[in-house]
Length: 101
Image 1 (cartoon, rainbow, N blue to C red):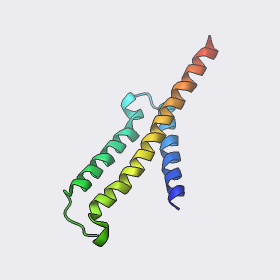
Image 2: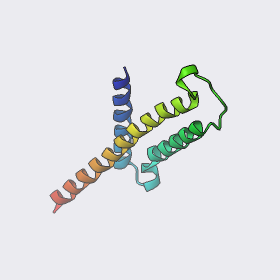
Image 3: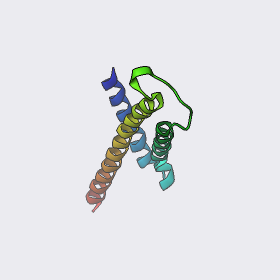
């Protein structure tokens, strides 16, 4: 179940970023998924610090820290997908430019 969720996050972020790289003309539009990832990472930081209050999970410790860790793992998987989509876009663009010569 967790592997399927991780692969789903990766594939979704990869496809969305790749489509934006090829279709969007504005650089900031291409980076919208990256901005969303940074916002989620900031929320993880706030959760870990405990800005949203105290949530007890018994022996597991701080509930917000555990939730922040889970979200951070998802954000890191998303960043890997975004990074690989950017690399794929650059490679395809170079191959296309070489074939035009």
